[in-house]
Length: 282
Length: 265
Image (cartoon, rainbow over all chains, first blue to last red; front, side, top):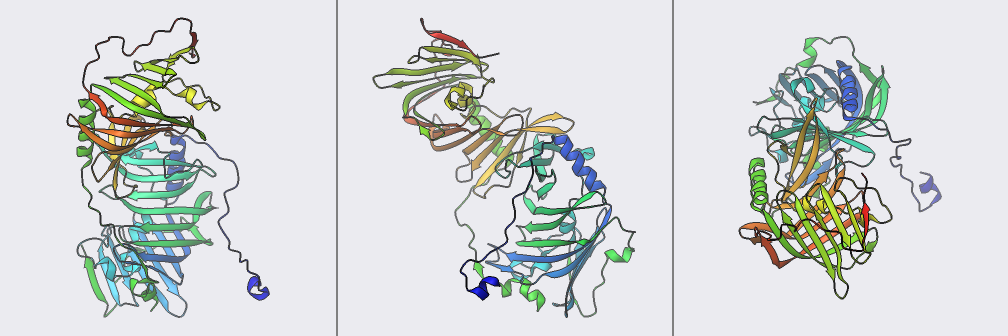
């Protein structure tokens, strides 16, 4: 604005500051213990956030960016309940999705479509619409958001193993931790890759692999704020390369409520609106 | 209307084209089996090569070298320079090493796994076992675990080699990257106990000798010590599985008059 008024040729753009402070050190058990402690400290949460995103890629042939942000509310109750709905001024609710951990529903009032199916169903499944013909919102499943929220502990009690990996994907200011499920035949499967920043020893990135060992979700975390002693990232990105969409979640710090009173069961299910086209995904 | 902005139909239209090159597929089991089959098939190896070293910004001239290996862990490598003769000669039985530097009249002995830092002279930290471990002749032990790491580009398969530890905390030993154009190793990272890159190696220009694929172009980088070796193997200088008649092929004797240095401990 100042530049435009004064006619100067230099414009200023805000860029991410480098983290301040000393690099910290931690052992692998220390990182896993802290991660699990923080994950287990959250049994339910309510977040108010601004949602943006992009969709598309090589399969679709184009990349599209959402030009508006959607004021969104995210409700979570462990182990698998999630509700996510977004509103735009004047338009009202533009999407609403819910899952009780078993089934999911997505309501898209603007397109008059209603999707329902297994909570684990993905948009890349055979009976889903082709990726190139659907909007990003039709590809999102509530469980994807839930899994990326850093509230699922590493299940060492269930036999999951961990190891350090300080590799191409990590910098000297990061610790990479691979979580995997050993197999008796020695051919193991990766489950998660959690990259911790050494400036705060908190997760900075996470890759969640699918059952074929392929990266299903790539998430980043920044801008941590502490709520009831629990670190909560206020800037989260969630990319799903296979489904060709990515989400940008900017959590409003004053809109974070951890472990609120239990919400009614109806919170986690949606009924199709009258006259909506219902698509059932198995 | 709002949702249309989020759909592809109203996108800003950056065109993305999928790759078209044909790629081969293999299972983890197939990759590991083929890797071990190649490694196990080589009992002895003799290579004639040009060895070029770089440390920091300093690049040393190429040295005509000979490299001999014998299973399970022995290696001998020496280099000669026209008019000067033998520049260096090093040997190892896997645990101990000897290094002869005739032009300096020095003879150094020590353990392969003891590498005192020498930032001013990174090549002083070179151990013959570093070269041997990078030569793709160490099979993946059946006591270890392997897993695909799918984070890399679609032209490659990345295989992690893991050593089971205690309390479900394991150690990453190796990352072997296979090109999907020929399913042969194109890169290998060997990690130290902390998961830090100890050796980064690349492989190219494969030649099939006696049915075994042997890379003629190799680089071996030691990022912590700060040096890189480039091995360009002469295509006519590869001999596999011919026994070495001299029982002392992999031991060096101290040349008379040379100064002996024992590296602690």
